Image (cartoon, rainbow, N blue to C red; front, side):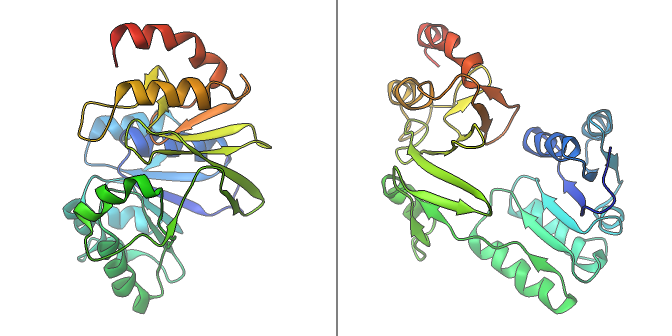
Length: 251
């Protein structure tokens, strides 16, 4: 049941990532409104306990905190700007969180444009494992990450302590974040429900990701919840028996 004292959350783009966020938020008692160009996605969102809105403007009038789960920069701009966009329709004090594939400059520009209307844009420093620097510099040659993120490093997020675990394979600098007290691991693109992350691209490697899963993640307690970068959650105990099958299929 929704808690009226909590923020009213909106999610624009309820595909694989957006839908997973909606389900988690509904489970925690938040009122969540979804907006998507796909009628099927909206139907799925309603079945998961969310409300729906036909346009970003309609969603904005119902929400205090809006998460963007759309694909890329053009789609972000289409949702944020114009008379029917979020900036024009959110109330003062609202917050936008961009959870899409885009550049830091895009988010910084949205923050600059939203600020005069009293709308905040969620900001967070960019932490990156040094082994991924060469990939970063291919895309952002004029900007370095804010801070390095290395194996064993501890991060305090509110009352949660996370430990960085270097889990390469999907990329050389892949990192998972382990919350021992909460019995959960944020596995990024290393481990999903049903198998490892993708390795069919430059700088990724199947044997390496298997080693990361076997030697780092599957050594965690069986009741550890696995929260991947997108998709459904699972547990270490549920995924361990699948290792032999993943090796046999090669992905």
